[in-house]
Length: 164
Image (cartoon, helix red, strand yellow):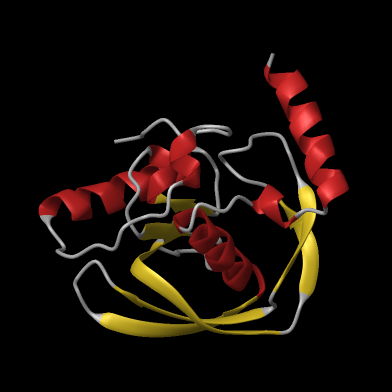
């Protein structure tokens, strides 16, 4: 089922998501719905709070493999970050706005699969960037929060004007 994506300035995007304590059928359904919603919106990643569910679930699909399946991570935690890169980012919750953001080039992330297995993934490039972006969402942080104060003010003014 495809869900509507919450957009800035919806308050749920600023809530810190709660950990998943039990992997229930409801959580499995949510993960499937998130993957479907993300793909329908042509996104690279989606955090549960972007569809109004402030729980620690993310789906990511970078399209780097032909037959790739969206990665679902429950309770993700960044263990290590290395390097730095500045690339353009966008967000399904801030449609039409793109800006260059500095993020680590490489990341090590621990999490739990939808089957309840703990795992660690080492990643780089777009996957590392997407994981950092989605984990920010789980902590109530939007990519525009990484902008300089001047650019942040410009964003607020321009984006508010577009929304009217």
